[in-house]
Length: 438
Image (cartoon, rainbow, N blue to C red; front, side):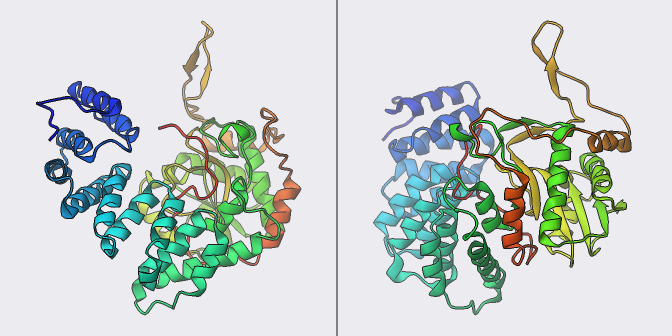
C-alpha cells in the first residue's frame, strides 16, 4: 500500500500535490489533485487525507485514511466520496463514487451521490449518462426528476421533454417546488426555442430557460476564445452601467411592464445604481420594502447585497416575487451565483471592479496600480452614470452583433413566461461553457 513514509506517489501531479503539502500549501495541493483524475485511488486518498488533516476536516481525513487502506471496499469508497462532496471537493469524489457504483450497480444511494458530485462540477452530460445507465430502475422522485434536470443543463431538451412526460406529480410536498420549477423551465424553453437557437453558444437563450433571467448584454471580448459572452475579470465603467440601464428600460417596454418606482437595496453599489436607474426610467426611488408591488428592485451585484446589513434577509424576501416586481442585477457572478436569480441581468462576470471601486490605472512608471475608491456622495456618482456615454464597447471583433433590437425581439417572444414563480438560485453555468480562473 502507498504511504507517505515508504514511497512517493506514482503520478507526477500527486507528487507535486504532496510537495505542496510539505510546504503548507493546501490550495496548491488541491489544484494539482484536480489534474490527476485517473491516479490510483489509494494514492489520491492518502494525499487527500494529509490535506484534510491540514485543513482540520476530520471527517474527510478519516474517510480518506479508510479508503487508502481498503480501496476495493464499497463502504470506504462511498464514505470518502460523500465526505468529498460535503467538503466542496466533488471532483475528488467522482472516481471513488463511480467505482462504488460499478461494484454495487443497483444502489440508488451511490447513484444519487455520484449525480450530486457531477452536478457540483457542472458535468451534467455525465450525470445524464449515469442515470440513463440505470434507467430501468429509476423512480420518479428524485431520480427521473434529476435526469430531466441534468438533461436541460446539458442542453438536451428533447431528452428532458421525453423524460418529463414520464414523471408523475410528486406525492410528497417536499418535491412540489422542484416540480413547479421544472414545469416553468420547460415552458420557458418552449417560448424561447422559436426565436433563439438554444445551442451551446446561445448564452441569452439558456440564461432565460434555466433561471428566467433576461441577459441584457454579451461580452464583446474573447467570444470565440472561450468566453462565449461572459466576462472573466471585468473593470466596470459609468458607460457600461448606463448601457445596462437603458437595456433594462427597453426590456421593460418590450415586456409591457410598467413599474411605478425604483426600490433601493442597502449596499452602496446598489444605491448608486438605483438612483441612476430612477433617473433613466423617470421613476421615484425609495428604500426597498418587502412585498412592494410594481417596482424595479435594483442591485449592482447581489453577492454584495448579501454581505450588507440584513442582506441575507433581504434576499430571502426577494426569493418570492411580489406582483409587478422586477429584480434587476447589473453585474452577476456566474462562477459564484447569488442566492436568488434576478429577472434581468446586464452582464455576467467572474470578478468585477465597480466604477466607484479601486480601479486599475496606469501609474507614473507605466505599470498598473490600484486607484483610490470613489468616496463621493451616491447621488453625485449616479448623476455621472445618467450622463455617461452608452455606446457599446466594440470589443475585439469576435462576438456576434447584439443590437438592442435583438434583445427586445427575444423579450417580446418570451414575455408570457417571464416574471413567473420564485427566483431559485441558478447553480450551474448550463450548456454554454466559458473559460474561468481557477
